[in-house]
Image (cartoon, rainbow, N blue to C red):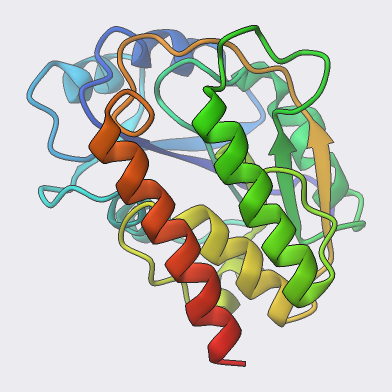
Length: 228
């Protein structure tokens, strides 16, 4: 794939403390950045626009809803990269993330957070357990080699369109991986460093967030397994 058009979608909700840092670290190979502002009550959208990003407002909360709105706003491109707005990922690592797609080796690439670059305390025990369980189930049902549900990921736009993504909330990441497995898409993982986020997590920072995330992730897996 020569000179691909790469666009970045960042779902964000009240990330005013971090979004500027995230946007400033995205490499110049990216054609456009879309921040899907998922009902923020702070200055997330203004700061994003000040840093040159295109913003789309998504009033109804939901990680998947924000991602879907970002995809629609992105329009045509060759590769879409998804990246969180809390500065836990390293945006400058986007180049090695998309490399397997550019080189024709994969359609979907997941940034795995479980390598030596994982900062102490960046993943909570409940996140580690949930990721491990989800990956175990994907291996059990579809023989996958995934080790993580990392939100920093890249996918060919035409492959993404073929997945017909629908998960409106926390099941988004695992739905993408499971549907890619069911369609026999080529995929890869690239180990990425991962640091403590700026601000409080909407998921792992609360008991209700952890419970809901776990419910949506597991229910998505079993729903997809039953629909084969």
